[in-house]
Amino acid sequence: MLLVQFKQSDGRRRIGVLENGTKNNLVIRIVEGYDSTYQLAQAAIASNRSLQNLASAGLGTTVLDYITIAQAGGLLPPLDHVDTAHCYVTGTGLTHLGSADGRDAMHKKINDVDTLTDSMKMFRMGLESGKPQPGQIGVQPEWFYKGNGSIVCASEQELTMPHFALDGGEEPEIAGLYVIAEDGTPCRIGFAIGNEFSDHVTERQNYLYLAHSKLRVCAIGPALLLGDLPSHVEGMSRIRDASGQVRWEKPFVSGEENMSHTVANLEYHHFKYPLFRHPGDVHIHFFGTATLSCSDGIQVAAGETFEIDVATFGPPLRNSLAIETVSTPLIRQL
Image 1: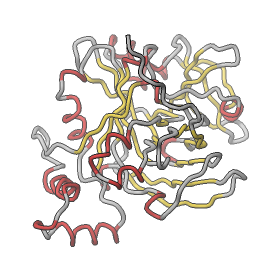
Image 2 (image 1 turned 30 degrees about the horizontal axis):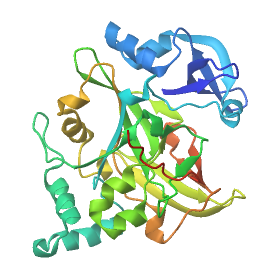
Image 3 (image 1 turned 180 degrees about the vertical axis):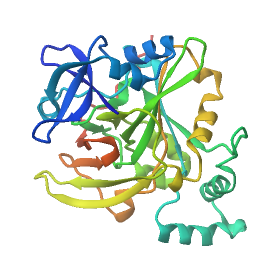
Image 4 (image 1 turned 45 degrees about the vertical axis):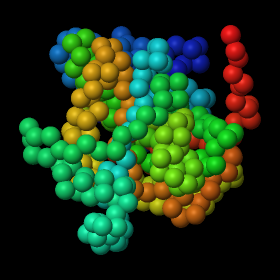
């Protein structure tokens, strides 16, 4: 089941389930009784029912055209919090195996332990201990903080690159979406396509600049996949120029078959910190990628569009690139 959160022309928030319409176009069937995914999640937690079960029970007769809502800018991220400070956006890197050729080259490098970079050492640790047996704890992954809920964009919204950034590049990923229950238990709501959006040129100067490269906006959606994540996920990442023509595209894969860590291991090492188990908080956690346009020498220009297309998740995630024009404010002494 694919759940979409959106805003009507009158400003009212709604949620609905994506379905095929009579002309095979996508429609959104409204889930009655809930104005947000967060509200639905809280009801599911309180009643100890699955989100899918609760959403199915609330399906009404009202259907709306998905394209009309998307083109009107009505799409919202599939999960958010009314107070953006109570939404954590984080992620893990060095988690994906990459293509067969790249993996073979990687394995040749990681066997020469004496010459490994810190990044390659961490990748090797994931290969060796990132998929523990049930009940056991695997090695912890690389982890980073991106921001709070104020940085999360919906599909069809602009991704704005800071004026001081050296690059604005896509990262096609899958994100896990969570709500923390009143007893502090992290509850996985589902999964969504994500564009983690980073500054790879800055990061390449020195890996210790990773944090600076990650403190950016990002995008998730448009749909929330309820239930389990397939073990193998295939998608296509594209860059479209200002006229809409594809100037770069490359397939990418995700899911545990293509990862050096299990999702459960990544989740454990995030939520093991009490800071991330505060009742009522929302978490958006990116699981990493192995496909980047910057690796092929692509630099995206303002007005061009990122498109991340994964059939399992319904409509593609689309966002155009914009560049910030406002300079950083000076510090005011009080």
